[in-house]
Amino acid sequence: MIRLQNVTKVYPNGSRGVEGLNLHIKKGDFVFIVGSSGSGKSTLIKLLLKELDPTSGEIIINRVKTNDLSRKQIPYLRRNLGVVFQDFRLLPNKTVYENVAFAMRVIEAPSRIIRRNVPAVLSLVGLGQKGRSYPNQLSGGEQQRTALARAIVNNPPILICDEPTGNLDPETAWGIMQLLDDINKRGTTIVMATHARDIVDAMQKRVVTLNKGHIIRDIEKGGYDDEA
Amino acid sequence: MRPSTIRYFLKEGFSGLRKNLLMTVASIIAVAACISIMSFSYCVVSNLQYMMDQMEDSIGISVFLEGDVTSEEIESLKTQISQIEHVTNVTYVSPADSLDKLKDEWGADEDIFIGLDDENNPLSHSFQIELDQIESQDAVLTALHNIEGINEDNVEYGQSVSELLVKISNVFQIAGIIVMLILGVISVMIIVNTIRISVVNRRVEINIMKYVGATDWFIRWPFIIEGIIIGLIGAIIPSLLGLPLYAKTVSLFYNYVPFVANFIRFRLTGDVFSFVLPAALLFGILLGVVGSVTSIRKHLQV
Image (cartoon, rainbow over all chains, first blue to last red; front, side, top):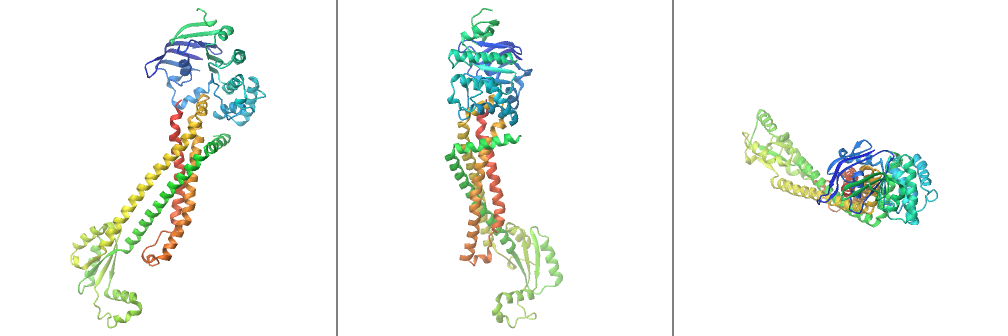
């Protein structure tokens, strides 16, 4: 599903984001990307989203070599990737329903399908009754659930989460993790960058540890500090 | 494109305008002012061109022949003159024709011509030469002087008038075109500025749209609609005000300076505005598209 081959990203100022990354993520995997700040987690996420292009190496997502994609093709790559951010990034002047419908509108889904899928996804994330609320009327957890609903409403094969629990208290964070686990069980590949040790330890999923731009550990099933 | 998508674009476009209402109104006024001045320049330039055309029709060269001339000589000269480049028409005027014309012009005072008739006519044989444009006059004159039997003394033309007219008209036309170009650029800049504010207000939205896989055109359309609406309203206002204003100005001119109407005619209001109206609307739409595409370009780089 996702394959990185010898990927290096050097920023224009000369600092190295990641260096010589080799990573293979299979369909249906749930992978934590862990590491301290500056370890290259964000760079890796941005490379996957093709927000950045690698300086060298190859990135293949869903059988497409993303290095070769033209600007015009990027939107179609991103339709395979749901994204959730630490800061939710909801539109404050739109209701929960509209925030989710927005993602479908953008890919020009028919209104009929929008009216059918949005309520279904909202009830999946536990916000069935909150469609008419505005983001500022919601708790942090509910806002992140809205963002999650938006990320999966178009049914992408891959979900990329950048510190999705970073702004949430442990209990709420746990609710989000259970939701992600559910989504993963339905077949969606999940890549989640985090430094929430407790969560990684409890989930017992694949853990890829980055340090100074290199992969220093890659464990099939484990915790935050487990040795390979 | 789906109808629901088009509705979405229109809704977003209008909501963008509403959210920056003050800026929207300000830029509509500014664009309207620019298009007004551009339309005014066009009216001046096109009327000058129109008057020049009229002058060109009326200004010609007259060649007077001395003494008696045989009809063969007249035919030969006529052929030679017709062959000169830029000459569009040559008319032979006999002394009798000239006399009749003079009598007509003097009308009631025809009496002074008593005693002059075909037998006793002091007027010369002549040619009236029409040119394609005033600018060719010099070239034609030179060519005329080269024809045997014609010299400088028997050629008459409106030298000073025609040269001055050409100069004035050229100056106004160049100035008018420069004014139109400058104002066109200014109008684009005004719209770019307004749309840019709208874009900055919605950069989070644009950012999210990029992440969920919106194409660049999907993101652009609402802003293009904003730009087009500003451009269109900015074009409609001066067109609607300008039409009656032009008609009124022309009729005032004819009323207060009636003698002007004898030698200068303005273009008809309908003629002028059948160009100005569609041109202004088209320009307004173009302004909107260019302005919005320019201002959003930077924000699509995600």
